[in-house]
Length: 320
Image 1 (cartoon, rainbow, N blue to C red):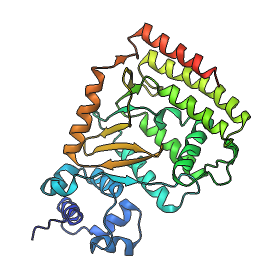
Image 2 (tube, rainbow, N blue to C red):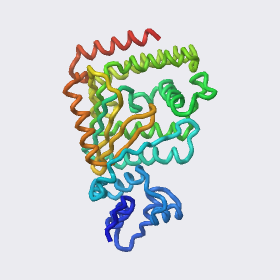
Image 3 (cartoon, helix red, strand yellow):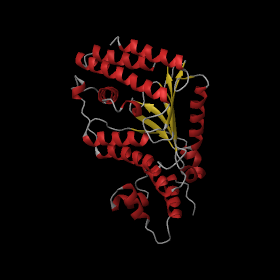
Image 4 (tube, rainbow, N blue to C red):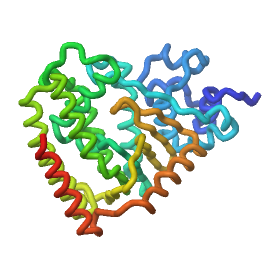
């Protein structure tokens, strides 16, 4: 009997991909790294698959999530807010991040992987290699979601070894995506420096923190300019930077692989509302791509605009 439940449609699609005598519970245990009882709870429908679990199952079995949810399209047109505790994370916070890294890893051989973003905040792919900036964005997330608590310096922002490992593995996989492009709000550095000044003014970061961030931002600008000149990451994969003359009220992104069409709307600095619905993906991607026509390409070409932009950002950073 055909079910209208998205959860059971996923189970049905998985069954159709397995050999006749294969155990679906064993597959769930192995692929999702969950216990036997947790697998049975999902099979009984007591616990629905998370967005990350559905994506990793689809990637592992080489099936399209669009195919799975096509007959349930009206139910699927929703965004799911993935809220992760980046400070003092629990197992439930690590798991979705590790699943996402695994999805990227399994897509390495996909020659059509692509990610695009129209953004007013720098993506983690660009700043995770900078310790101070990473801590500052964690501080901002903490301020927005949980209150600052006893934080009075970036030294008080701790990143667990496991979270650091996830971040490094994410960077390794993200740099293997075949094509990446970012459309930046032309005030993107202005927003960041203004935020740093604000947190210093309300004494949630110290003068020493500001000087450290200032030094790091100079190195950050140098790194971005180097990438823009080459038009590729150090991994050799293509990346393009665009400058938008208009301001973005929000950051929109997408990730496309052979078996995954993921839409993301940035919230609370580090979190994202996500959707696997293909019609949403097409609309969001189309909107992001439309911004290219209004923007200036400053990677490889646009030399004058590129030089002027990065020099202006250095002047701005000097005001810290």
